[in-house]
Image (cartoon, rainbow, N blue to C red; front, top):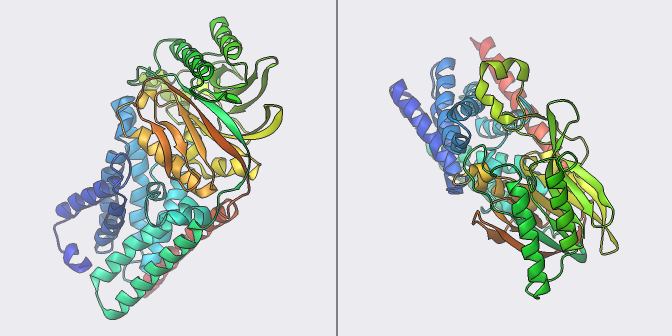
Length: 507
């Protein structure tokens, strides 16, 4: 089959590469047709392994990446077209690299696991470089509803990427030269993957302690592009109004009294220490609630023309007790790499505003609720796409996990569903409930197995109270996944290098 496809005109093969990239993108939200990841990943190898020259392989990888990223990241158009084109081109480079790596192992008997390992390596790279990485479209994020879900607490997102890529390569290996031996090997590998996934599904959620009633407020936002949260202080007023509504429901007995209340990222859009109206709104919210408020806000500094996205733990009697500062910040969304060079060249980047500075401390806060200590694990929006940041929430003792997010600028796009799916994968990895609170949807509660307990998809205002158990315990993924990712990436790279050197000697 590989040989037959290789005889097609190059232009047709490039078109097929774009198509296979689109097929892979359809495996992600908002489509969520995860089985398409199998023919999608197989399709890239089908074309690349038959390429006669290295530059043809790279061209095919370019086509694949453009199809995959062009569909998967189309939500960047909500910012502006140039941002969309830039991020698609930047991420496509990594699939050009993947195609080049795959081409060097053509004809080798062991190419299926090597190419699957190269998928892991390329995703590891794009998650870290450049600009601290943009690993938003990792294959492992799309499989939380698949039979491989049980792999998450064992081997993490990287391991799930390897598994589905291996299935795709195995399918091509089987179809290319079908035979009894290959059917047997493919069957054994499939059974092994399903067996390990089943074993992983038996890992229980962390040990449950005394529950905590957590109130949440989704203030609602107008949405639509860069200014999606509305004019200055609009989001603050919305979340104050939502807090009043929540406490009215408490007084009427419609929901239990919360032990604390969570506002999302951009629950306020101005620094309460420099803006009197914002400060007063937080004081008013605390007076209404009479319980601690965990509020997402924007803080000025630490330097001139700088800012930080933070979550403040505010006590009705003591004010700010502690805070978490967002560690994963979005390049060209919250900060501009090479700002002094790029901003004069591309004035539209001015929409980013002051340069965001990332935090450095793990997202675990030691707080007190209802007179009892609580370790609160927190991630803010883009944080969820980083393995280390996610794992830190339980590594450092988080008992209750929340994700605060502001997706108002992406209303009507697939970004919101993609982020919620990533958060579901994190819940499945850590075997913890995760409460997601956003400015305008999707807010919701995710179960320890990654299932959706409930969700609010309407971008308008919503409030509620949910009971979350204080949980302890760490799944194997926290220790195993980083080592596994490094091992697979290194093994894939070394085997590709060995194959390339062997070919050079043979020639």
